[in-house]
Length: 152
Image 1 (cartoon, rainbow, N blue to C red):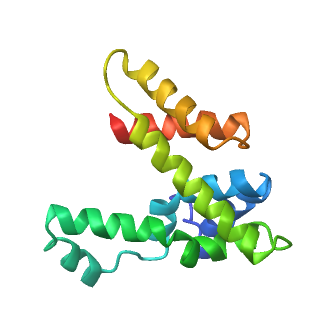
Image 2 (image 1 turned 135 degrees about the vertical axis):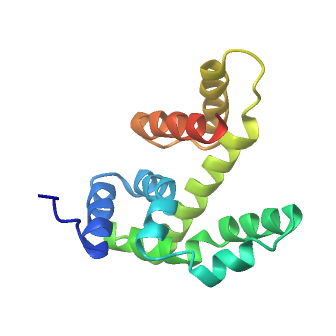
């Protein structure tokens, strides 16, 4: 017998419960790291959005990517983080999301594959961490794993 798949709300609640165990900044990074999974659970992108995305040029895709990152604190991520940290102020939540997104972007920007792959990942995250201190070591570990996944 197949196990029953948890509902979308139950799956999202599990991500939020995990993030709630983290300090605000680390929770923001954790939820941001899982944004694609959270989006897919909520049915995003829609079939229409997929159709439109397939017509975009590489330049338009890059612009859309930057727009989405620049406005992450205004979208669903805000609601997820507010649920994980209901007592945090709205400005603190927005700033945590902005910082988490910028930290991830800095790690990606610092990544240069010029030697041992893992050493390059570690170096890139260390450089980003110097720019964005204040995360837990477990978050830096997750950032290394995340960067390695996307840069492979």
